[in-house]
Structure formats: C-alpha cells, structure tokens
Image (cartoon, rainbow, N blue to C red; front, side, top):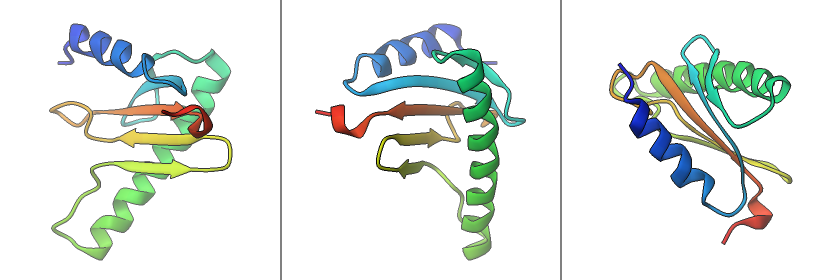
Length: 105
C-alpha cells in the first residue's frame, strides 16, 4: 500500500524545484493515479512513458539478465522527463517528473 502522506510530501518537494512543469504517478498499466497536469496531457504522458519504460527495462535486462532499470532520463530541446520506475517498495508505480531544463538552477 502506498503511503499517501509520503506521496504528498514528495509532490511538494519536487514542485518546489525550479523548472518543474508537472508530476505524475502512474501504475504499471499506464494509468495515472495522481497528477499535476491537465487530463489530456496526463493521459498522453502516462501512456507513452509507461510504454517507453517497459521497452527500456526490457533492453536493460536483455543486455544483462541480472540487471534492472532504476531510473530513466530523457532530455529534448524543450523538456526533460525523469522516470523512477521503482518509486515505492512494491514497484507497482512509476514517478514521472517533467521539467523545463532551461529554467533549472
């Protein structure tokens, strides 16, 4: 079971960082559990990030069967997407943070 207070604290802490545009917690099926984005953007990110993370994890395991994906960072010209597939103990949820890298510091 997820500790809601811990999730709230994590959201607050992450949102306080400069450049953070939004945060999503998704389950392993790609369904958003909690978000700071509007519904359309949440659905889009959740589906694409979930699919991409499954593929990345598969690639890591194929390269080394004893290895596993711990963190994934995708940086483009406009955004940086950080994915923590092991956000909580049972590994049922992914934490996704989207930020504007030009506003970091």
